[in-house]
Each structure stands twice: as C-alpha cells, then as structure tokens.
Length: 111
Image (cartoon, rainbow, N blue to C red; front, side, top):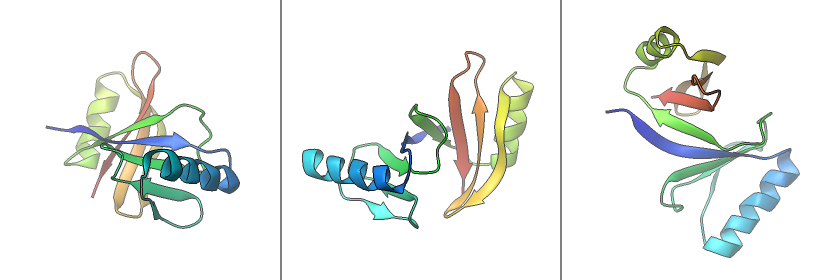
C-alpha cells in the first residue's frame, strides 16, 4: 500500500534552510543529510522529513511513496486531482506534485 513517506518543510532561501536545520538539530537532536545547497533531509524525526529552499509554498508538503510513479500520476488525474508539477527526476527517483479535491498540495515519488 502506498503511504506518506516524508514531510517536506519549505524554506525561503538557502540561509533559511541553514537556520531551520540548525534549529531542529539544536532543539530535537535531529541529524541531517545535505543534498546540494538547497535541500536537506532527516530520518531521525520519526517520519522522514526534508527542508527545501526551492519551495514556493509556505505549507509543509506530505510526500507519498508509490510503487509506480506513472500509474500514480494517472490515478491522481482520473480521480479529479490537479497536477501542479509534472513528473521530474531528483536524487533518488522521480516525483510529481498535485492538489487533492480540497486543494491540499501533496507529492508522490518512486525510485
């Protein structure tokens, strides 16, 4: 079954990413892995979490792991979801973003 794999937190820019990462390291003891200048992730939060300095949103982004990215994309469209970012490659796999019928933004990813 597909499930939420991680939550991505937005940062305004790289400086905000660095400050936010330091905040969570100091307050909660989380350890991060840096993926380039604009992204860091952690598995020590209990749920996978990331900080994205390229996010235009100010809301957290739930990211769902799926077995087949193309099938998930088709199912989202067929069920009335709105694709907001087409399938793209990133370190570790491929993903796309979409709005559910209530307007919430989510993402789906696969290896």
